[in-house]
Image (tube, rainbow, N blue to C red):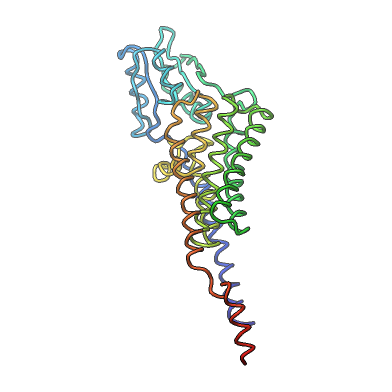
Length: 334
C-alpha cells in the first residue's frame, strides 16, 4: 500500500469526527443553552401598578429588555411592529399578558411561564395572542423546519452551477431562474398547500426567491474564487452554521450570547426573520433582513463575475487554441 492512499485514509478518519463534532456543537449546543438574553418585552398602564411586574423581569440580569408603554393599545402596536415579543398590562382584574406566537411560540411560552411565576398566588393571568400562528401551524414547527430545505436548495443550486462549469452571465441567469422557480414552488407548498403562512402570496414567494438567490450566489461565488473547496465552505457557512444559529425555531435572543448575534446576519437567519415579517406582521421590521439578504446576493454575484473574468484572463496553456497545431508541427519536423 503506497503512502498517499494511507495518508488519505488517515485524513478521512480524522476529518469525519471533526465534522461530527462541529455539527453537534452547531446544532445541539445552542438548543441546550436556550435562555433569554436582552429579550425585548413591554409593560403597560400606570407605573405604580406595573412596577412589581417590571421588577420581576429585572430579577434576571440581562435576561429581558423592558420597555414601558402608556396603555394596552401602545403595547399591542409595539408587538405588531415587532419591537417587542410581548407585554404585560396591569388591569383591575390582575395582570394581562399580550404575546405573539407568530413571532416565536417558544418565546410566547417562556413569557407565559415567567409572568405566571411573578403573579401573586391565586391570581389568574389572562393571555391574549395578538399575532397568532395560522391554524395550519399552531406550534410554529413547520415554519421552523422550512429554513433547512430552503438552505439545502440554495446550496444545491450553487453547487450545480459550479460543477456544470457555468460562468459569467450564464451562471447569473441560471441562479436567478432557479431562485425564482424555487420561490414560487416554496410559496405554493407552504402557503397554498400546508397553510402555514398568512401573508401576501407573491411577497412570500419573493422572500423565498431572494433567500435562494442569496444562498446560491454565495456558494457559486465562493466556488468561482476558491474552486471546489468553495462549495464546501459555502455549505459549511449556510447549513452547519447559518441554520442552527438562525434562531428560526426559537428566537435569536434565546441563543447563547456569543453566537446569538451572528445568526441574523447569515442568510438562513435573515431569511427566517424576513419571512416572519412578511407572512405574519404585514412587512413590519422587514428592512434589515431584506437588506442583509440583498448584500449576500450582490456579493455572491459579484464574486461569480470576478471569478469568470479571472479564468478568462488566465487560460490554461495546454488548452489554448494554438497548442495542438504547434504540437503537430513539432511532430512533423521531427
